[in-house]
Length: 156
Image 1 (tube, rainbow, N blue to C red):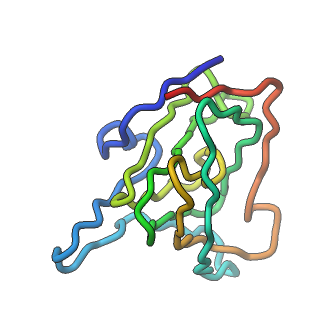
Image 2 (spheres, one colour):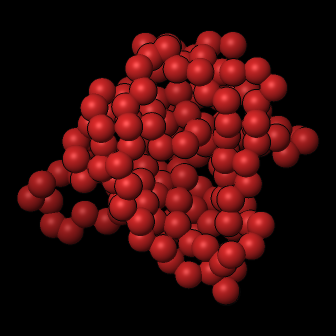
């Protein structure tokens, strides 16, 4: 199966979460109103990470989700990033027939709603530097991984 990358927009991404435009001079910029945490024992973690670029076409082999909390990615160094998402199928696995692939601009923060299947953070054109906001409690609901039975190809 091959998905074609398309530009990320708040409207297209709405079933999966929120896109926030990072506009210098806008005061204040609200990340999102729907930061979610369903566990009293989970604490907010703020991580900084560098994402290596991956050329297209890209073969996605693994999805993840966070059943009890949202997860936000905020770019600090402007680069496009892959946003690959899928709703849950009735079995609970990612519904690959409904998967969508977007290219986030270096001026767009993304927040995945809790339980949304998504691919790992991947830069597209150059290394990217990101802040990641997520809640962790040290239990199985922190992150659930799903290996795809066959790679999902993402093309330009």
